[in-house]
Image (cartoon, rainbow, N blue to C red; front, side, top):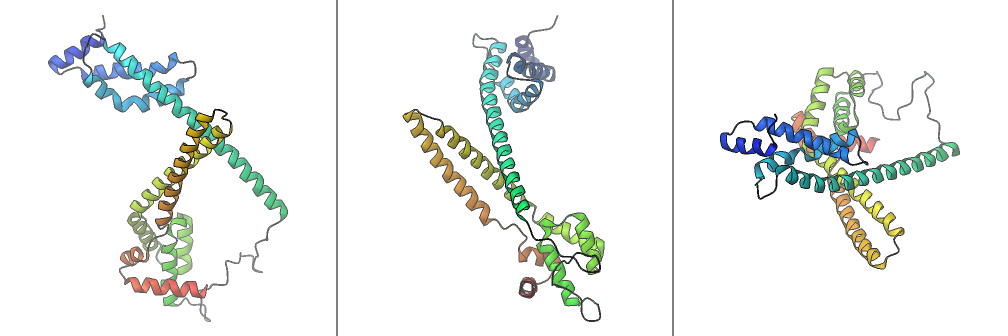
Length: 284
């Protein structure tokens, strides 16, 4: 006969053994709890377990028998967590619908612009696309050494927009060693890893604030209660300020690597990077 969870907890506190089996039994109960709710599916069981999983150990260790069994204590914790989970799922559904509607609107606008007519890209007579007026070739068709260096600076400055096939084409075009080119690109990406993580975090924060603002605006538009409308107005004002601060913080983080980062990777003075990119911009 299987022991009750209360007996298993008492045995664990007495001997210190059996925690893994106890933890597994609680995990199974947490997974099966959403099945009691008609709004939840099998996928919700997994999502609910993932969101509740970090709390299970503290719930087991923090339980004290104060005239209430562990099953009742766990059911109370799960009930409150289910309310939070359903609210989060509802917000995600509204956010997905809003995103889908905006995507459809932007696609419709793009189709209208395309039908209005766009400039056709020009091609050379030899069949290759015309990249632009900038060329690194001299009159005899040999690349200048200075132009090669500036070409490398330009590629490193645009490291966020380069994928592996593009890097390979650039190495073939410039004559640089492919391994060297990839090594420099990867070293610069590692150098920018912390900055890229901060940009991703700020973008997620801006997106959350944006969707909250849109959902509050839709709720305010359909609200007739004056008191609730006033509360929604205050929430909208607060969310606008948060969205403004998120956009401002994101605008202060540079997207491309700094000249100092490029100079450190190449082992050259920062002034060399400054002057090389300045002449490139001036020539272009």
